[in-house]
Length: 299
Image (tube, rainbow, N blue to C red; front, top):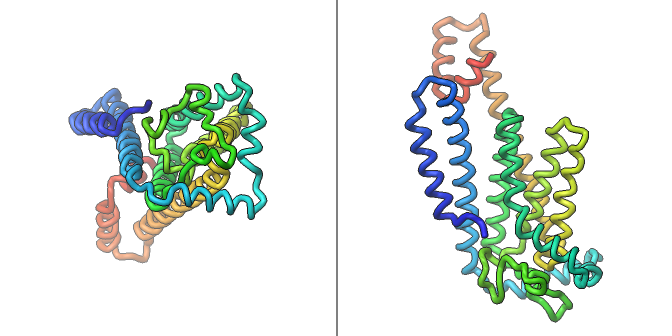
């Protein structure tokens, strides 16, 4: 259903070549093309890596059903709401189930892409932090998926679950695992992790009075993954925890980099230092990377 990882890597390679070719062209159009191409290449590489690792994880299926039953038992011990009971309320309502199946299969990736495009063009100063949080969230979720295979609820019909996708002929997986995605990587739910990030980012960054409507996206996502029996409650909980950790890591890194640059500027401006020593410190700081030069030129 989505772009295969081979095509994503090929697109990234083409974009990198174009960026290199235009790197030294000094006009506004070239600068915009370089900036846009660079970020699109990064996004394509992240997307391709996500799809490739998910395919590798398909081979790790031993114990997936047993792990799912243990997770079900844990949810019962924690007195969490029953996914089966929730599904039974809606399973025979065709319009609602069709909407939820389509939402599950069709909104996940476009919503994340739309957020990144919006941030890149309208809130460039916030773009890199959100993109990095996306990347770290993907890495954390894929690591757990590769280590702990987990069957989705629809694989356990003896507990009362119904495969809503198959029932309404809207499954992205097909019958018997013939679809486009790894069906035994339910834990954690990237659907939930990404949707929460999209909703929170729009609310925090946008200034529109309509921004709160963005929270409908995680709401509908959580409803769709649960009622269609594609994910357990705890799949979403763990994904949200990874998202928070990913944000904290990137935020900590950004603070550390900012503190380092501030210390370097303070050293440059210190009148007690020998002029030659200050000049040497400035050279060493500039050698640390183009990011510092960019920040210095913008002041």
